[in-house]
Image (cartoon, rainbow, N blue to C red; front, top):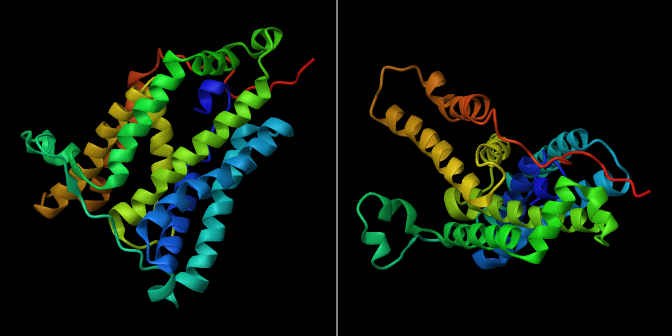
Length: 280
């Protein structure tokens, strides 16, 4: 969503971590998992507002802003974790998790059924979001405008498209989606917030997008590949493989590096990606 409009979003890690934090806190305080799930994209939106403000309105370098936002979110959530969530865990950090729901028939498919169709509601929301975003970007007038802004903003401006408005809108929508993804770490998996619990998954998500050639369906396929590598190291550790655990922990990150460096050398990002647009 961001890069198709010409904005590089390095702050995905920050979106995820903010979503994970606020979803856990809101769900704990309200005793309602759905309230936490609604809060998660709002946390991602707050980070996205800062990203849009500095990169689109004030033309600050997008890479620098993304890195700073990541550090900011890590610092704020780490501070609040130590001051609130640890000493008052029962009140602030005990949200619980969504129970998995098996989809009839699809969940009975051998091998793939339990993996894809016996999951929490957050995973099913992910399927919906991927499909909706793919259709919006490649099958609608809105998507045509977004891709025009990302490829040739000056030409888009000449036909009346408000380039920076389109970019800001897409950054905000991207923040909502990434914040929703952050809820999986707490409400969909662990059941509590942990300091820096996203552990670089935001950068793996960025690599998945590149590996998927800047398409939602391609990014989903790449994310499944990286997720397989991540889960493989856990399984091999449990069964007692002689490979040192430190090397096993490297597996998902090595898969990411090899995929991006070796398999997508000929892929091309949007032409105006990362280039601020100054009208006139």
